[in-house]
Image 1 (cartoon, rainbow, N blue to C red):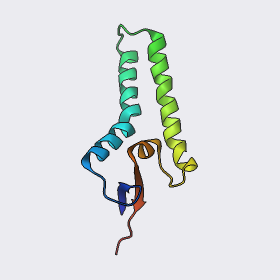
Image 2: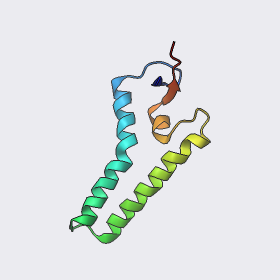
Image 3: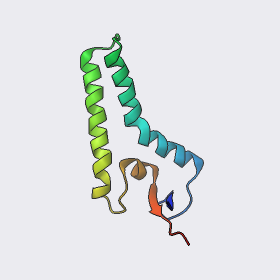
Image 4: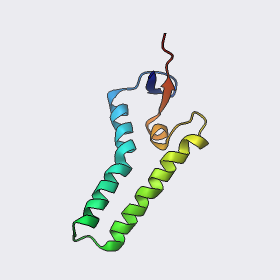
Length: 92
């Protein structure tokens, strides 16, 4: 598809940047899994904490979806924090 994740200046990213970007990208989804499991299977966590975590997931996903519309290079929050950008490489 020609999609490349690069540094903001077009340079290749290192493994640590890639891992950091991936961890930030999947944090809301993992938090959602944690929260849903504690809704389905009763746990010792109070309901207000579970509800707060679930609302946090919704807020993060909303921010993740809207951030490319507001940034100069169409970057998501996790791209901004990791110092990366998604580029489209033309195929020859």
